[in-house]
Length: 256
Image (cartoon, rainbow, N blue to C red):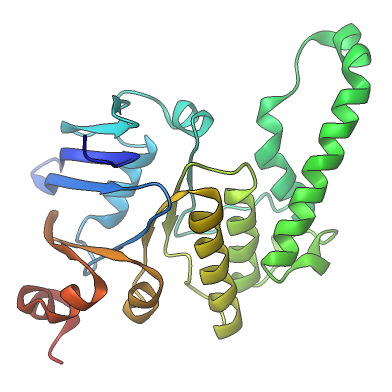
């Protein structure tokens, strides 16, 4: 067994005559923060689309706890603990910030008709209260606790990113895929982002994989880094090993 909670094995994706991914092997372990870096066009977002179920690979497999989930939908993967953020902001603009976080916890409930709703009302109210309390705590941890009643649509980029982070972790994911989470964040917001990710991995055992162009941020936050170039894994190792790798410096990092 590889020890990976979530894993891509031999993944290949072709768009017409363009091969976006070629035989990619990548995995992330419980409690680990792993970074995925590489130049533009390397295939990072395509790989995230495959991992989250938005895109089905031409070949290869995606494994969750060793089980092949390659043909499973994004909804199915989400129900089993796989969460993702996107490069472009994906907020419910007409909902409050608090409700944006609450909606991530709501999929477990509902249904059954009026009679069932009446019978379940006391328990449902208690669950609703617990969910709102967790959402408020997450917003505070992200440094935006005061924004709970505000509409999400009018938020500046950095604060919107922090709302997306709180929403992504609200239901205690087992796997978290973060696509350029530090984009548009201030220095303070980046520190909070890093703190939330470290706590999520360390205290809740979440397996975190993040794509980020801020190499310094990745090297500081991640215990392991994978470098993707032209759709293939160029290198994998600790931040120190990646910095010292001559192939990585030539393809992406540049000279020392």
